[in-house]
Image (cartoon, rainbow, N blue to C red; front, side, top):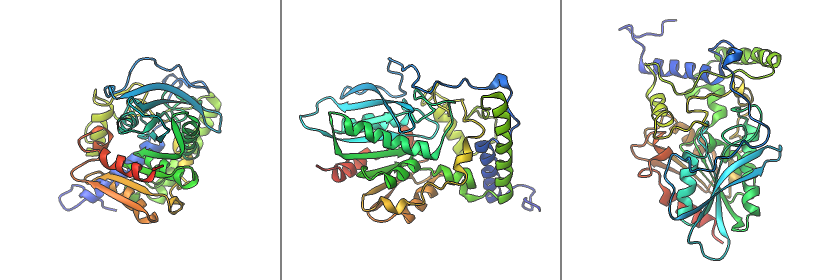
Length: 368
């Protein structure tokens, strides 16, 4: 089949399809041979790794907040590490609280910490945490993801907040960023303790891993990816440790603009963090397996009657994830499109992230 136009060049739609196909192969590891044993990432211990005591965030510490490192366990026994931000000038009485995580492949020292600190400045108790198997959190091997366990991580954060002396457990909401936006929606659907949920620049990771960008991956490509990962399991089992995909967000030339944008955040001083999967590290080759047939937004309507706020950039390549989720969700719901913003802009552009709207949304729906 000829995939070129009459000039011999791919059309924009064909280029998009090819990018989607290649990116699915990258996500699944299907385009790469098994990585040699010398290239394997060292696995973490099942408990939390040693926590850093210094301020190692990619954003400055606010003089308006109190900050402490905390740990808590999910129901799978994995120890999670978080940063708890509290308003410095808080008054007597328990606070409304927020659990924040994301982006997918990021750590709490990046976007989620910025969101949490900024919401604490606005009067909330806010917990940014590393997902299981990533950052300073526990789980073995490191840098593997699971739609089930990572949804559970949000509920474990709600457990922690609900037991904290500064928090009113009946006033807890959650914020998910990027791929953790989808996890947040899934967590809110199943965890009725969550009174309101917001997702910023949201990805549905089960959709993109199983169908590629803009649902462009064919059954043949999906089958190829599954066959490669299934066989990789034998290799990993024989070695006793998993193989990892090539380093993320290293540019070789010719990448789509959104991949250049990822590099500009994760691989430059703007957002680089050595513990982040996306900052030149990688997920295991078999990470996508559990995402391939487990659509996490199947029950999005069950968030209602609790409110849902979706925030996305007008120019984001991922905008369709929020639009689809908004269409599937029940009222009350809101989709807020930020003019001119890209996907990455809502990671750290405080001039574009609508923190005022986020604060108003949670103040309204987490009212005492």
